[in-house]
Structures are given as C-alpha cells and as structure tokens.
Image (cartoon, rainbow over all chains, first blue to last red; front, top):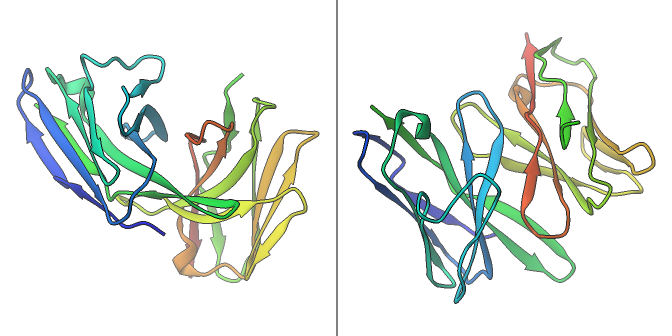
Length: 116
Length: 109
C-alpha cells in the first residue's frame, strides 16, 4: 500500500492565522482526501482533491476556509485559514490505491492542530 | 437517522473473550464496507474489508447484511493488543469514506 508522509505532525497556532498541511505520497495516486477528526469524534471528509481540477468540498466546508492544492499526483496541501479555536482538530490526508479490482485506503499520520 | 450508527462502548472484556460489534448504515447505495482500527492518537488503519459472503482473517470475522443494512465484526480470543477504537466505514462509490463514530474496546488482563 502507499506510504504517506504528512507534516507538520502538530502545531499550536494563534487565532486569525493560517496553517498549511502537506502530504507527500510515495507513489502516484489519482485521488487524495482530506479529513478532520474533532476531539472525541470520528472522521469527517472535508474535500476530495484530484490532480488538475478543483477540489470537491463536502457540505459545511468551503474553499475560502480550506483551500487545497494538488499540483501533481504525489502531493497535496490543505490550508486552514483564519483559524479559530473551533478549528482545533486532527487533520488527516488519505489516498486510495487500486490494485486490480481491490482498493484500499491509507492515511497519513495526522496533524494535531491547536488554536489558541 | 445518522448515516452510520455504532455503539460507542466501551466494551470491557477479559483476555480470551469473544466480542462482537455491530454497525448500521442508512445509505442503501453503500457499496464497499470496511472495519478500521484506530489506536489512541494514531491514524486509522484498515483492519479488514467486509464482503457479502462474510470473511475471516485469523481471529477476526466480518459479516455484511445488506437487507438489514448492518455490518458486524467478531473478535475471538481477545488480546490486550486488541484494545483500540473500531470504526465502521463505508464507501458509496465516490471513493470517499464515511466513518462511524467508533466502538471502543478495552481488553483487560
């Protein structure tokens, strides 16, 4: 399966600032996903990032707040903009790698964000 | 009705016990089903896919009941290392996952 390097692993940020999270994959993948896991909750999909097109955002998430880049098939960034304490969460990227008819999802190790 | 419903637990069981979790889903378009495991402060990791015919991987057995829209996970001979949160996950075909809130398992010596 694919190996994902995600950074930073954690950060403490001031409200009103922005943080960019990076994910680097060791193989080319078509689809990359960004999730958020709020404290004590499960994962919620933020958006799907495909190379060469605009990201597709889920209900409740907007591009101005969470701009995403996908410059090539191995890399993506998620920016959390104009942060507030409510943005304190773990953010994870994920890829799906297909092998014949089977596919599996791999996650980055996550970015633990605390906004103060 | 929530898209995915899981009993949050915790399930506290002794080593060697058999424990089962269920998960119900509301979206009949769901196509693929998985159980993921998440350890504290770690990312989710795939435990096993769930097939209509049921599938087994060592001590773990997964079942899917499309008619009743639920999946299950059975763990036999529980080990201390099985302590984790187990997430019910499905894909409606968009290749993006929907996660349940997880069931916490604590295996005790």
